[in-house]
Image (cartoon, rainbow, N blue to C red; front, side):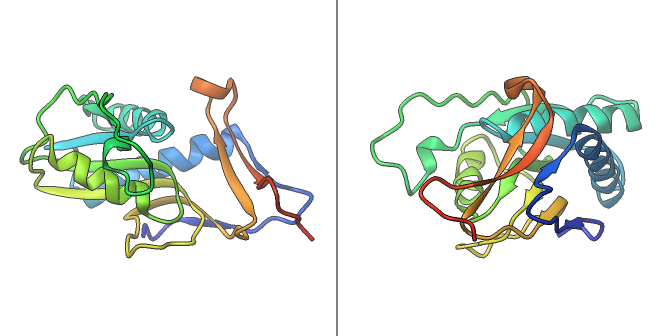
Length: 190
């Protein structure tokens, strides 16, 4: 886990993280990733579809601005590799317009909980080549792991009860940037 992850515990009345918090968090993560990789050489970013990809694009853009060289960014469809989806997914929507073999891949998702999406993403990524290394970056770590997978870079660590959900809303799809903690359907928050 990134050493500088912010831990946010908010009272029940305040369950929202705003756009400026997200912007600062992604900027800090971009600097942390570049520092731990000694710059941008051989660095590529791959976001897990659908919600990890906009976060990946923002991280790649921030690192590009910092370093002055383009950091390539692609998207990875993990549906065909999920162990918790019924039926076979035939249409892989991954778009990785660069070679991953020999590269330092930063795999990005918006939230990590169980680790199942990341496990599937590692399988999917290996079908695109053999990276020199793979590091995981997540905007939010909400805990609740079922698999022994831990992120290397964490934007925010939120202590969220199991009956609540972390909803990352980004302007690309939701028209706004915010992180909202919401009650899962069928549960009662006391």
